[in-house]
Length: 229
Image (cartoon, helix red, strand yellow):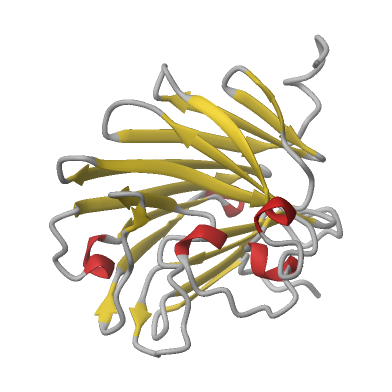
């Protein structure tokens, strides 16, 4: 008999696991917002994983030679860049999240990732809200940052994303950027970075003005019914 619960929030480490249903075709979600208290832990506070029959969005570590790339660059989060360098998340910090279940296995998640930067003036606020249900994920990020700091919404995928305006298709995953309206999407081929470490995999980077990202993730049927170049 399938369990009645469709999610588990491990409040100790700050990990959330959820699925749309108990069928083989379910969409599965993992999310991190909690303790960063180990030197070998990764800078993945605020990162998510999506799986449906195969990985849709997953840390690039899955496709590396070593599996131990700790930087924010390989995770599905907002990367903050100052002076050409990624602003680091810091060990000894604790991010938080609240999880509110809805009908039919739906979930709403509100995470405060600000503490992960340990008071660095480059990132004075970062909040990530997830809405998960009906095999769809909506991610809303709001943030405040210091002068000269760039915020980049990023998602790592096994398949090269094909970009059409503010929509990208990566295999069975459709990524739609709702906000900002002036968003630009670009693709990083990890093998071009270091073929000896990165066996495969790609990253979609979203840049734009303002202090908010809203990005939706779902299946590829409806969005591409009119064709895709």
